[in-house]
Length: 190
Image 1 (spheres, rainbow, N blue to C red):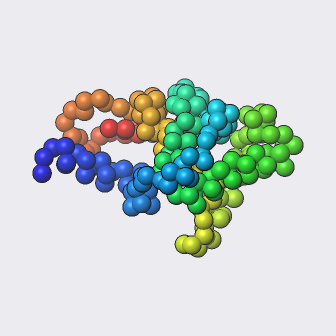
Image 2: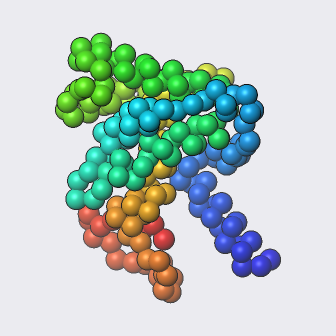
């Protein structure tokens, strides 16, 4: 086994714990050209997804999800890697989230205040947790689960997420399996 193959296998093993087995088992397959052609995300859709992601991972002392371009990442993943069924759930979920905002706050998500957005997403997160707890294997994924997972994946695999939110060493030194950890330290990206 050469070095490239070994690194590839280690990345696959480590990535599976972060992203989930479902993604790696199904992989990122070339989707049906007819379906991919009908998925046309507009700049407004990307801005909407950026705002959802920014509400999930806001800018604090580190840049937030919008700075990492998570909205664009989501559109690429949905278009290139999701099955037609999951694409439909995602697209309907974008509409459902806006409808939930109108129902809860009498305003569209994009017009809502940051506090209203946060309250809405907390409610949706509780809803998706309950849904997933009682979900059968054949039941479809909850749209907010998809949005949240794509936000986390997009952010922590971006340069900003890996270097600003996590501790990152471009060229790590020797392996030390017993690094001292102080409460509040950032997790390691490398």
